[in-house]
Image (tube, rainbow, N blue to C red; front, side):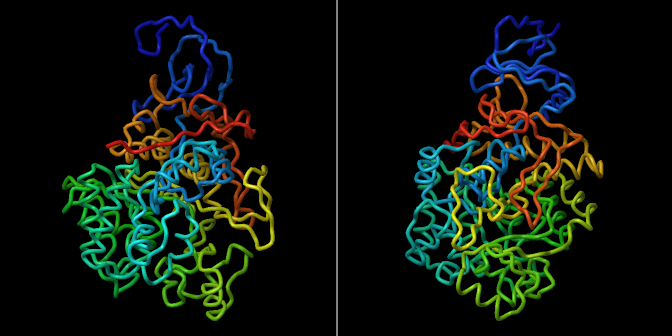
Amino acid sequence: MSGADGLGTQHTETYDLVVLGGRAIDPETQLDDVRNIGVLGDRIAAVTTDEIRGRVVVDARGRVVTPGFIDLHSHGQAIGECRLQALDGVTTALELEAGLAPVEQAYLRAAAEGRPINYGYSASWASIRMHVLGGEPLTGCQEGLLTRLGSDPWRGVATPAQTDTLLDLLGSELAAGALGIGIPLGYAPAVDPAEYVAVARLAASAGVPTFTHARPLVEQDPGVVVDGAEELTRVAGETGAHMHYCHINSTSTRHLDRVQALVEGVRAEGATVSSEVYPYGAGMSAIGADYFHPDRLHVLGATGTPQDVIYARTGETVASVERLLELRASDPGGLAFIKAFDENASPDRLARMLALPGAAVASDAVPFVVPAGARYDPMQWPIPDFVATHPRSAGTFARSLRIAVRETASMPLVEAIAKCSLYPARIVESAAPQMRRKGRLQAGCDADILVIDLDRVTDTATYQRSVSPSTGIEHVIVNGEQLVADGELRLDAFPGRPVRGTR
């Protein structure tokens, strides 16, 4: 018999937890074979063909065993949102596109409340810009950021003194443990391109990534200051910064081939540009944001009519320009869908997006929306049907496996698992070396482990019932502790830990 290290080690100890007889997938070593896994404390201690025993036994025969999934783009950071993602296989959910500020307050709040899965944040360029240009307080929360996305003060051109203050505050956030710099530039497309270069230079000097929601493309907005894809890729080459292209599918719409060609071109020249995708045909953001202005609805691929917008708080399809303007004024932070294409009629399009070379899967999960007058306890489970979100908040990863592996066979299982685990881990490793222990199924790595029924795994969330959990992910282990066992969520389990940057 061979041990985990291939040296014939005999396993005589009793592990804290064992996962037995599953088809183990480690995307880094390309392992795809039956193995037994032993866990001691919060780490994987053995991945072996030997017989092993444990105090807790998970029977994984006939199942796939993988590293826990890592979501780089999750705005849904509260307990209920994290539980929903856990049932989709997510063991680490990071808020990196928008970020939070100050990050220290965000980390302290999460630790005090407890989290079922691991968590972490980037430095929020948008929040700090709102503070510097508009005098808004920094609270470490998302609510104010959503409400002010469409407000004018923060979206203008900064003075040199304001830019210096912005950069100083971003540097302080990186020193405090932020995982990079989140730059939702698409919400402030008039910002001076020189500021974006300066922020990228700061990230490069600190050795951390930037996470960019790019400006619109020239095909979408001929009057844009600079084409978003050309800007991001050029700045990567010019500064040496690691530029991460957030939801490249939804911001590129019908022009994804051109954008991907730019990305691959600068990669070939040595620049570091990563990207992410999600398999849905509708976006979601604050209805007061620039994208929901009646004159801007076409930018994200919609037909340009208000009927493409669904106001999440009531489920209302917006009937007119007048109603859209009314909602933007009365509830600017209220979340709304914007439809780009019918994903149910376009499985091949979804499969092509998921197959983009090197792209990670990321959900762009959003916070829960509760109707006016309704009462929702964040600890409540199951989540009541009156709560709304985007279905990608509940089903991105299970849906990706269903489409890419089972239904279209557009990629091998090992590659699909890599896009959900190893690739996102590598994107964050430069900022947080602890991520080198995640996204892998190897001895010494963190015991974030999934047991999946590949024949049954699927999303169940729809635009009408958006908080319906995924099925087929039978066991979710976070830092060595069972969070989901036989498909049932443990409501007393809060094993999540912070992922923090180190300089």
